[in-house]
Length: 205
Ligand SMILES: Cc1cc2nc3c(=O)[nH]c(=O)nc-3n(C[C@H](O)[C@H](O)[C@H](O)COP(=O)(O)O)c2cc1C
Image (tube, rainbow, N blue to C red):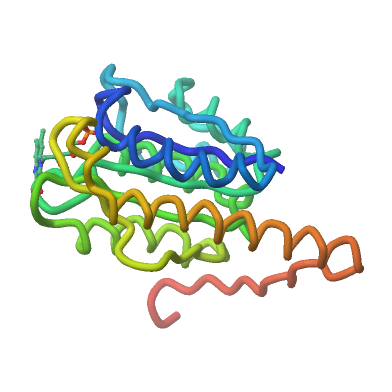
């Protein structure tokens, strides 16, 4: 089993990475493979709503998003991490997730996910809320922890001192491993996920 940990910061080795490493440590202890996915710090085009992905399953911008969706097909779980910018997740991560979920949403369904945030001071719960919404409209079980999924600091060294934040990260990893093993055990015993119904209306019609 494999979990992809997405770093939505422009800083590969910053505070978000420090948080994700702790989730990965707990997953590894449980025998779950992990891969860090740094979404980069080059310009990333936003979704242009061309809907071409509806026909091809791929975004017209052939970049890190398409690469990630390819990896997502065989992944079993996801952790999306972001710094807090003006009380929201990084614009970079939101662009990345908009395009990944719009073009490849079906590859995320029924796979557990968690959101983690890094901040200097405030805006964490609002940002947490934004990321979780991608999961809950895509049939993804949300992995919880023992407190807020946040770490605090401006430098990785400061995050390393946030013992409670790191404990929360570690517990996300343990809880996700447990959920993944439950799902695997269910499948081994013939329990498949439901086939969701799909009705699309434009508001009321
Ligand atoms: C443009 C920008 C906006 C920020 N806005 C906030 C904010 O609203 N609240 C906060 O607590 N920290 C804010 N920060 C600080 C970062 O969230 C914090 O330093 C974070 O831990 C950085 O994570 P990283 O090292 O992974 O990029 C901001 C940083 C930047 C660059």
